[in-house]
Image 1 (tube, one colour):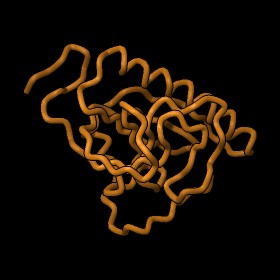
Image 2 (tube, one colour; image 1 turned 90 degrees about the vertical axis):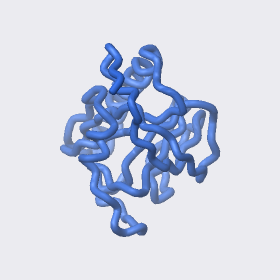
Image 3 (spheres, helix red, strand yellow; image 1 turned 45 degrees about the horizontal axis):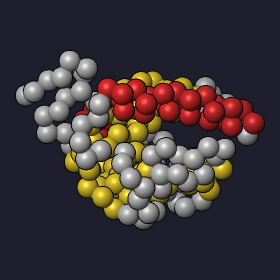
Length: 165
């Protein structure tokens, strides 16, 4: 197994099918149910979607980010997951798989992490305004396989999120 010194394992990353929900450049943040969660003051720098074969820590489909050019909402793409970013919010932990056609450079990885550190702070402020308790924070970079192992296999294709936005 080939190992990189930056902690990213390049040997056969897991491949997942991601359904794009928020195209790169979009200002609207939607949940997998299609409802608008919030309108962002800045465009999303990544394609954001979910893996419908697994349920993440918040009780919704496992989140995934796809790096690369803008993809239309509803696009399904098979992508290797090179890592995961963990977020804690409202007393829940949730992973975001980080997918790309090629391994991420250290610069790309740091860019993804920087985005999620900022995202967690902004989401914490939004939750405060909404009267929702619990801190929001980015827990850092982790292994994609570990994130998938923490998720539950989706038994029912008609998932209703446990939490309201």
